[in-house]
Image (tube, rainbow, N blue to C red; front, side, top):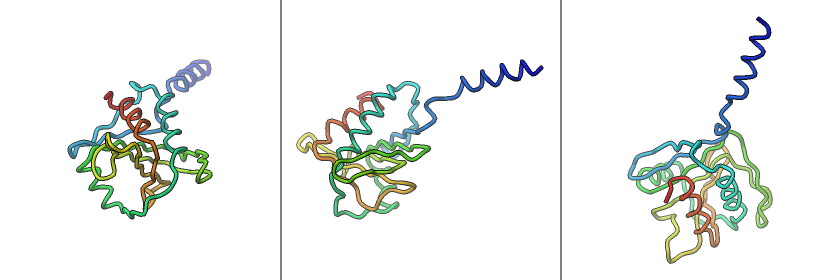
Length: 152
């Protein structure tokens, strides 16, 4: 009997979902879709997200609150990444950045366009910081993240 309990325990440990450390939600046209992480190249996505946070240079002089973020979620195309544990990235301009969420505008007032190579992202620990962050030249990273998550 003890042997069966031991074998069952080993099987349950090996069945642990390795994608459970984060959730990705895609917003478009007022609808939210939770992305199935099992279909993604998580190593490559994680690398892009690290580059994204490393590339932040400054916070923008725009104050946003939760009400504005909810408006952005309902009206614009957004990718939101929620980590189950805090993440830490060394940023050359700002030192260590600790966060557990990233919100990436794909369309709308805060999005990058073909004419602008810079990007804007929101990050935070438990709640988003009051100001979004500038990501100079970040359009390519944002487009790469978008392609990895939604396929285009």
